[in-house]
Image 1 (cartoon, each protein chain N blue to C red):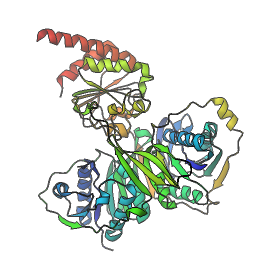
Image 2 (image 1 turned 180 degrees about the vertical axis):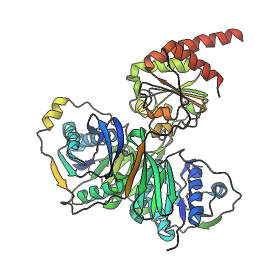
Image 3 (image 1 turned 135 degrees about the vertical axis):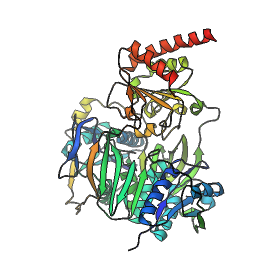
Image 4 (image 1 turned 90 degrees about the horizontal axis):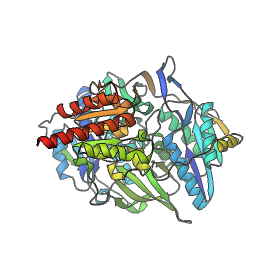
Length: 253
Length: 334
C-alpha cells in the first residue's frame, strides 16, 4: 500500500499574442486552453504504475484557476483516486512552493511525485523547494522507481546529465521529480475523461491555508528571444531549397 | 550593512569541471567588482588539485575546498548539508550555479534552507544599485521574460548552460582554504548504490563532423530511416532530441541535450526539432546550425544560422537525393 501525492500543473500548449498584463504580475496570451504539463503526465503515469504493483491511493493536487480542473479530470481518468485544486494564480515559483508545502503539510503520504519542469514558467524549482520545506529527502530527474513490499525505502534510477545516472536508495516519505522516459504516456480516451468529470474535486483557498503570498518578482517585459546569430532563411520549392542549402553547407564555415 | 561575497558553485561531473563554471565565474567577477566584494568558489569533491588553477585563472579570489571521501560520488543530501554550512558561515549575497541537473536539484534546496530568494534558468543578470534584473525563458523557450526582483538579498541564481560568456583568463592567484567536513554517512536518508554509465563500445556521436538530428516532428518510428538516409548521404551521423529516444525510436546514445550528449559538429541539421533549452544546450556550439521546421516561431530558429520553414517530409528526401548526386560527382572527380 502506497499513498502517493502527485503535484501537477495546467499549462497552455501554444501561446500567441503574448504580453505583460499591465498592473498585474501576469502574462497575457491567447491559447487553445490549458492542458496537463507534459512532464507532470509522466509523474501521474509513474504513480499509476506503482499503484498497480503495490495497491494504494493516488491524490492529485494542483494550484491554478478554475480552468486547471480539466487536467485534474484527466489525471483521475488515468487512474488517480482524489483531486485537489488550490484556487490561486501565482507566477513566482517561490510563492507556489510555499502554498503547495502548506497544503501538503497536513496530508499523509509515502511519496510525493512532481514533473521536472513546467512548460510555461520553466523554473524546475517547485518540487525540490517543497521537499525541503517538508523536511523529506528528494531526488531530481528520476527515471525509474521501484519498491519491495515492506521496505522503508524506494530504489530509484536518476539522471545526472551527460548520459550518466545513479542508482539510489531513498527513505520514504520522499519527493521525486519524475523525468520522462521510464514510463510511457498511455492514451486516455475522451470517454474516460468525460466520465471523470462527474467526480468531486476538493477546492482550497489561500484563506483556508492562512496564507497571503507576496510575489518576489515583477514581470517587466516579455519578448521573442534575441537571435544568437542572424538566421538566414532559405525560401522556395523543396528542389530549390535543397540546392541552395547544399551549396551553403559546402561553402561557409 | 556591508556587502557580502559572491559564491560560485562549479559542478564537477565524472572527474571533470563542467564548462558552466567559467561563465558563472565571469558573471560572479562582474558582480564582485560592482559590489566591491570577494568572489569565492566552492569545490566539493574528494580529489581536486587540478581544478584550483583553472578557477584561479577564471577570476576567483578565494577557493574553498571541501575534501572528503564521502563526497567523491555526488550525493545530493550530503552535498546539500555541506554547502548549506558553507553558506551559513559565508552568508553570500549571491550564490551562482548552473541550470544543470545538479543545479536544478541543489539550487532550490540551498535557497530554501538559507532563506534566499531563488531565481532559476537565467540567461542574463544585471544589477543597477539595489535593483536586480534577470532575463529567463518562458513558454518552452518561445519567449524571454525580463524580471525585476522585488525582495532583498540573498539570492540563489541558476544560469542556463552556455548563456554566459566565458572569461578572459587572469593571472590571479586565489587563496585556497580548506573547509572542515563532517559527514555522518549512516544518518543520510539517500544512499548512492552505483553509478550508471553508458555501455562501452557505444556509438560516439560527439566525434561526427556532420550530424542530422531528428525531433518529435518525425511523427512516427517508421519515418526514422528517412533521416538516417540523409545522414548517410552526407557522410554524417544521425542524432535525436529527448522525445525520440524516450520513445525508443533511437538508442539513448544518440540523444543530444543536457541529459544526453553535448556535440559541436561542423554542420548540425535539426529536422523537426522545436529547440527546447534542454536540447539547444547540447548543440549550440556547432559551427553551422541548419534548422528545418514547419513552425516559423520554433525557438530553434533563434540559434540557427540557416533556416528553412517547411515540411521535413518534402525537404529531407530532396536533400538526400541531391546530396547523393553531388557525392557521386565528387567521387568521379577524384
